[in-house]
Amino acid sequence: MNDSLVIIPTYNERENVVRMLETVIGLDHPFDVLVVDDGSPDGTAQLVREAASQHPNRIHLLEREGKLGLGTAYIAGFQWALGRAYDFIFEMDCDFSHTPADLVRLRMPCANEGVGVAVGSRYVRGGGVVNWPWNRLMLSYGASWYVNIILGLGVRDSTAGFVCYRRETLETIQLNAVQFVGYAFQIEMKLRAKRNGFRIQEVPITFVDRELGTSKMSMNIFREALVGVLQMRFQRIFYPSKT
Image (spheres, helix red, strand yellow):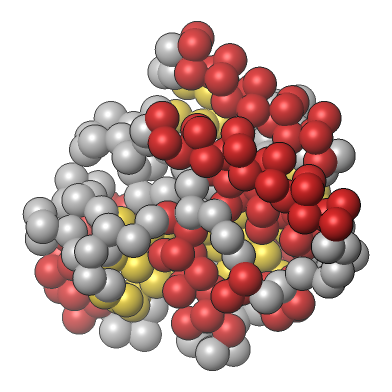
């Protein structure tokens, strides 16, 4: 077992999953991978099982019944990782919108500088977005601006889903108390880490919109983030406590 685990949630990602697993496993730094599949009807899990048979100590599969949401998939993955001896635990998409080679760069602040959370950021100097329509880009950028106004999070890409956590960071977060499942989940996890005293550092990455498969984005996810940020602020005012 290596010291780093990459958690990749999947739902109908047969076009991408094998290539993604091969790419991550082939990086110079050794990363293990846990795929959390939400009952994909397209056979994604079977492809992961076949890949795992070729790399039994590197590729792992956690199957769940039904589409239960991105946030709960990551929570299940975090709990699986904390039950083992991983020191660095990553979130990553399966559709190559996150460049696998950037995992090495994302790990460095946590491994070498004692950072609690390293965020692959589209909105710091050196970061960027490729192939997004202008309205989606403005919506995403505006969401991070809104988060910082309401919560004072201090992270320019607060909804980013390409993240490295130190083990110690996740151990202090009450994972079963995390409320949200979409974009708001990403915000909530960063906020909980900050409230628990961990430093967050943004690492510039280029986000590339998926070429294969279908996006899981919906207006419900944006709506959850909009309302969820206000809920997080309300709870902080009236129920300030360790998270």
